[in-house]
Image (cartoon, helix red, strand yellow):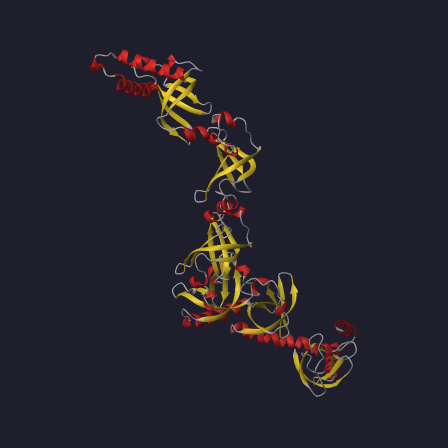
Length: 578
């Protein structure tokens, strides 16, 4: 149009007056004021068509506004003829000769104006989170769209923002630029400010012993942090329940509503210690009456350590089974090889210390002493059979059950052979029979004997041999310190060097030979060892005394040789008569 005017100015005289007439014609056609475009005006709804509302804004033309701009998506627009509304004039006239109006842009312009005032006054604004974008979310602030960074949603990271979507809530404007249409808001700043106010109010009235409602905020290995409404307190794992809890997650979950008691509060550091079990009855009250000593109960293994296992008798009441009280037969074994966690076991109450909240339990006592049970089933004299589990330098160990052994000492293997010789006939894994000799439950010993399965061949000789008897022996071994002999081929005896003769010159073991017969006097009888102590010297002294008594003394003029010679002759004569 400007080019046409220029052309008219060049081609016709009086071009200036024609330009002024053309401008006046435009003013008469469109109106004198063309500054409505880009501004917000107030209009009245004339009628409502299917998809548009026709609005009179006081100009020569009416404008149409889409109905969808009068309500959020999915909701029915509430607009009717006669309503007065504010609209944004986008263009003064479109190709159809109507005014292009926008209700949404009018709201946006109004919102920007109000938001700028709130930003300058550092005031909170209300908005609704309605979308998710990269790095955060979009917020509707009454027509203006703002950006909410993910780090500004909450004080702590939020896994699920779903509950926050679509709910009106306050925000703090961090930054805004109208020229670029950029607004950044924070929900976290509002929460922190509110939290600080609540914290200050709560701290002022906080006292030990108070019972408060809280929400589990975080869970660690040593406890849980509970939000009391602006301030956090620590609920230690030992204060969650009276029963043993290995990890707080066994009893608590994040977001759980809990009722807690303030145990300790330090106003200087503002540290708060909380407890849940303090609101419950103490199961240890009267525990000594409920669990008397030597009574038997069932419990569940809750924890296993190097020194024993903890058994729960009831929720909140645990006792310790020391490793020494776990098994009669398994020594120096880790408790985990005897019991398992969550296993139900029978235990015996050994001791109760209610003030110290300690109960000593016995696992093996509830099962019975295996040595006492064995003694009841196999009294001394019973014959048992088992496999040789081990051979030592002093005897054999014979298995009498899964965890029970009996010992056969080397001296109880044979009546006649030495222990070392008899042991050489046995090997590990061999099955043997033995007789029970003794059961000592206190010392946890079972004594067995193999040779006792047969009668002692020397029993008859031992029964009739007495101290002082003269016996005939057969030399079986000549030693430097004496000679070993056999009495009636079954009983062993020994004559010491000093007892081999009355005269010192004759006290020589080499005077005797193996197989030679010797008469000797019995000086001692060891029935347990089946041995005799003998003396030739004593026998000779007794004979001399008897001869002196019968045939006279040297004082009567008879020599010792004469006296002994007469005694010997008398003995020979008596032997001949027999």
